[in-house]
Length: 552
Image (tube, rainbow, N blue to C red; front, side, top):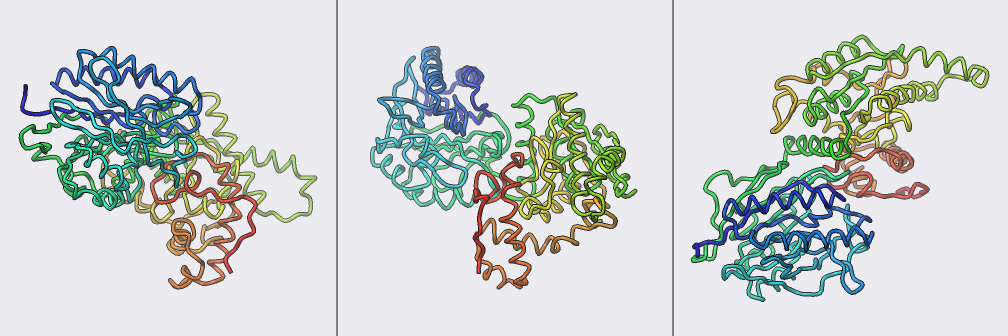
């Protein structure tokens, strides 16, 4: 008998609904564990079905298939390491989010999640029943191991009950989405019970799933969250063997490579890249196509796409009208060339002229207004969708959170697309991300090093170029002011008086609040985009479309 319990931590990227594929991934990982001498392999929360399953988990056949897969995997693994794997589990009319422990060819124990999150992006109380066992302990090589799942350890009750039941080691499968505040949030929650002196292993999934992205970030620690030892890394798949020393009853921590990255632009860029890449790849698109305007939003979107998919799968299309400046034409081409992506020009002026002629009788005697601007935007959308339909590439839209907030976007125009990589980034953050990318090459990026976004794109005044000499600030406050107001209204749910106290004009704040509420109908029809902040549009923030509330 060796002097340690060897545990293979599996930080993998399951696909929601791909039960056969996830099962095969688990099979390969168990064989890897056996070859590396592991006694136990630990997978993430809801691994067999994928997380979050949303209402897919309410389909009985999906749950049955997962339970069958878990039992089949257990039978196949009689001579392989024991394992813990996440799966939905139905029993006596109840449906649980479970972690099953399998050893010796069968399911030996099951822990059912007790703390079901029902806030922000989570909706588990509608989907699952709460587990009733205060603690589940399994024993392997003489070590008493307690099990819990994700949200269970954000509160003290389950960890304390597990320790009181005699657990020497705590294993926690997770489906914990990344956001820019996640490390601080986890530290504050987990350190409430770290005084129990119970070593624990945090195993998280990695990958993009619609609006969510998971960083992995799996780690081990003998004490507090602050002293955690990172295992595989963040935003990457992989496995790592850790040991629990049978004499000291402690986890053996690596001397090097333990540090997990702090939050920052590098994390946010990698999150956006992984989310877009997985959305495209998991939905089996050959690549993406986007409107390359010569502006900062499309430039950053193109960079993220190239870094996620490779330049050969990104198609940038400039769609000029009579208002498109020569600078924009030059900048769009320069950016696409710097990224190595395909670049084409399709002039929309013939289409605009055709619509002018078609609508001449109905519009006779009327002044031009946003109608003519929106026609241009919608013609671009029709063109991009035609390319998408003909060649299979998914249209990526390029609007940022500031624009989505106040409706400074054309429904069925520049909002048209299958995914929006910038949906949760305010305009000021877009500028910072561009500057960061020009100075850095992200880990795992498939795009080139060096300056990929021409400097003029970053420094010139933003413009939709839908009318002569148009600037964004003709319609909106400067973006640093606008974004501060929006963070107050959206992320913090502040009263307008709190925002005005920071020096903002009352009329401006009220106008932005009005635009925010007014644009809800547009956001309901917008494509999904990755969540990076505390409150994104869609999964987090769901306001009524018909809504007359305004702060006094």
